[in-house]
Image (cartoon, rainbow, N blue to C red; front, side):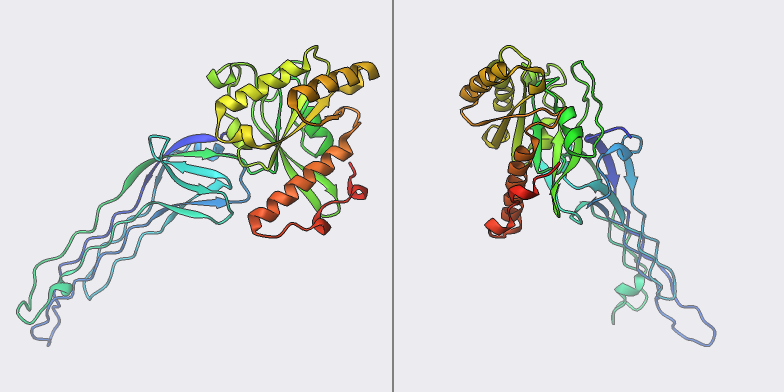
Length: 352
């Protein structure tokens, strides 16, 4: 299944049914009077977030959506049937924008969230509505209200606890495959990852978090170089960022600064997020090289650096434990809970 995180759709609500102009004509009933019923209401168009979707690929081949029109009223005071609402199902984390792609209509980040995209027209009144003491035989009925048309953009931002960043060939896909059941493409050339991948990392009994791997960033990505920064939106909602640096590079500090520069240029608060830095591929280095490059990376990042190998699993348990702690704290804050040390994973539960 292809990944699609941005698409434009056209929606149209249902028109209201016309009111009926009718009079009673029955044998033995004198002065029957008006009995035209009202028209039915047109259907609304809704967008609803559901849990069983993770891409907008369904809307690549179908962009036009129309709700049902209301039925016209009939004689004998019969009201027309209302048109059925149309529900457009989107993945959790979908943002809905106006046609200008700047005005946010709704952010559907919780399963079951709904937003009204187009309101159905009301049905028109039949002539029975206009009967009065001075107008016993009204010859007037209202038409139904017209449809509402709208063009909107859907933009998906994946819901993940931890975001995985780095230059191309930093070992992000290998890391994701090692710690989760995800099966991303892995190869020895840049940009093997062409779209974001999600993996569920299980740290212990009942303890897990979602890890999002996005395509690698290169210098000038904010100007469109490489794949650009179009996928950075998928890590905007993460509690923390895991920055992998390829330890086999000569200048690990420059590699770190390149990605940080792109985050600063992108904005949206990514540069301010909590960052965990890890020196990857240490299985290909000597102990002396590991210490030298760890010191250089730590100085550039001004933080503690984890030394790991996604291929062999060296150094992964402590790193995953720290990421699980950060994800658990973020969930507690989101749900309004209170951080409790008893809820944090213990070192004994950190297992691959």
